[in-house]
Image (cartoon, rainbow, N blue to C red; front, side, top):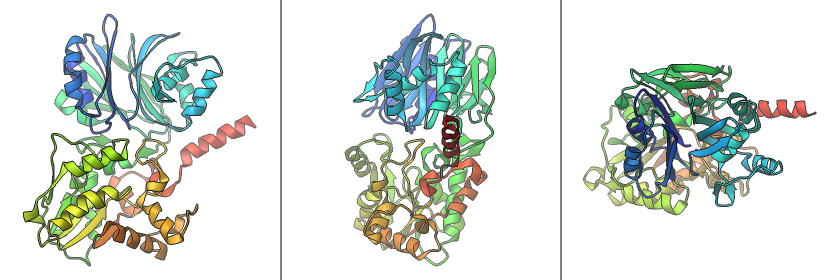
Length: 479
């Protein structure tokens, strides 16, 4: 998913925009972009796949003057998009994943609506969103129209002469939070962007809610939906530890996940607990708190040069980052039984090739891998959290056990079933570790602290009740 930030200030907003946007760098690795509105629109987009956001935009933002601005760290395509629309000129940034983007693009092309911002052979999704909005009778009705047309999720910020419009995805898969300080209002994907920029949280936007922030404050433009399906993976992996969603802090949830993992580990003895940096660290802290075992760092991340190994789109880049970023400390590893906490096991290849192998080479006596969520069974349809179904470690295990791909994997989701146990044994052998254990779905939900009905669990269960209900309603209306 992408990270988005917007601000309206009584004075120039460029410095706040720079640092507010930069606090989303953990979410995307491909492009960064900012737009400022003063006397006119000023916009910059840079490729940040090989450099940090600040280094690319520091000089740009010093030259961009205005009191309204939006910024984005994008996971896949270039934004902000500028559109001189029938509603007047605006810039727009988005966060989410549109499953039916190709279909919608063909539909607009059939109406003689062209696209100029291409991403290879694909349309730029943010441009697609902008042109869907332009089909409405007003900006607000256009955003509502877009919500109805898309399959997937989309939260957005739209900058025009009125201020910054903030619209949260209709089911709340991706978050937006409003903040305030004496001289400015802001909106962010991550509350991490607020404290050091001196903003206080005013409101967590609800699903489908649209507000306008400007020099005079915040105005509601569309009321919220009653249903919520926020991405659970935000707390488990994607979100920054200092961020809160729906008022629930990420670091605290990860500590609770680790505590629950330790509660099920009464039958093993370890000498130390470690988390795979960075997102596994808080899970390990919780494990150490509950188990009474010391928390140590057998693997240290070289922070200045390497970000997340999960987010880059190419496997080659992911492998390079995974190889280089973690440095083993043999004096801590040698001769010890180690419980390694990880946020999840997605493909398993990086864990095996670039973490486990370093521990064995360092002289580990035993390696016990503990994942803070259940086995991932389905590629994400809403936030780009997981990709192809064929590369998921659990699916590879099932394919090998069954001798073929199977459609109904429900028996493998039941931690009490023999098939589940065989799947975990396969993953344990494939990773070449002493033991592997996964968090149960119930424990993960309890660690988050929201009712399960409010949490998207699609990656683990394949259930998509909200979007499914919308499609059924649309199909019924078409008949």
